[in-house]
Amino acid sequence: MNYKNIKAEKKDMVGVITLNRPDVLNALSSALIGELGEALTNFESDQEIGVIVILGGEKAFAAGADIKEMLEKDYFEASTGDFLGNWGAITKCKKPTIAAVSGYALGGGCELAMQCDIIIATEDAKFGQPEINIGVIPGAGGTQRLTRAIGKYKSMEMILTGRMMNAHDAETAGLVTRVVKKSALIDEAMDVANKISKMPRAAVIAAKSSVNRSFETTLAEGILFEKTSFYSLFATEDQTEGMRAFAEKREPKFRNR
Ligand code: DAK
Image 1 (tube, rainbow, N blue to C red):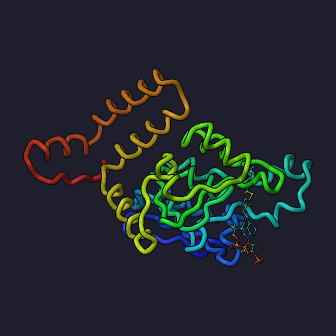
Image 2 (image 1 turned 135 degrees about the horizontal axis):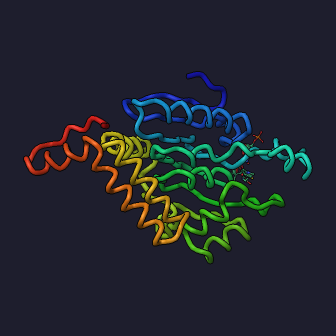
Image 3 (image 1 turned 90 degrees about the vertical axis):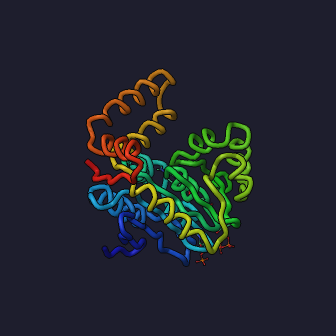
């Protein structure tokens, strides 16, 4: 697949998307976001793919939306033209998504990472919502997802002052899944992705959407959704195979059915 601002490739059952504007620290232009949406749609509909990994560069996962592109916009043009409105494609993915973050994940870059399901970060990763420094606020979910991840008081300080959070603090605060050495980032992200991609697909999708319910609904409704999803998995061959393999003390052979 040929794109200008990203690379998209298949590695076994994992779709890997690499943000590829290194000269501008992967600033997320409209063109890049459009290509990202297209690549995600392709991987979503590709039956061979079970998991999607988003990689940035070494110095930056992404330093935010492209400020030079935003510079000339006025309120009327931005709002009526739905400027940046095509963000969020990744939140519609049923398949699990993993952000592998090295260096800066700022503004829209931090929001893109937080739109993923798992965030693996290098020791030098830096997370931040510095939009206040340029006269705006987060616009792709930062005020909501960061606050849900790390709580009101840490998030308020970051968003009001633009202060960055280092990888260690981000892990402690619950913003990242795991911190790894820089040289190990891609291997670690691919290990997790490969592991999930071999799990029974229907259960993976049900698990992801159940966890996400906890952000979007009441506890009672979330628990009802989980229980209904649990029962529905008894309609799959993989449930029978998984449980039978356990009882027979052998490895299961899942067929995604
Ligand atoms: N946009 C455009 N260019 C950027 C950029 C960005 N966000 N970040 C870096 N660059 C460019 C720099 O201009 C520079 O380009 P040249 O001058 O070489 O042409 C090159 O990348 C290298 O950057 P620096 O020279 O600045 O590198 P340093 O190591 O000195 O500093 C830095 C690295 C990451 C601390 C710094 O570049 C920086 O502060 N960058 C801006 C970070 C930022 O403010 N990010 C938030 C942007 S606002 C929405 C969806 C999304 C959004 C909003 C709404 N809707 C759905 C409605 C998102 C908004 C944002 O992200």
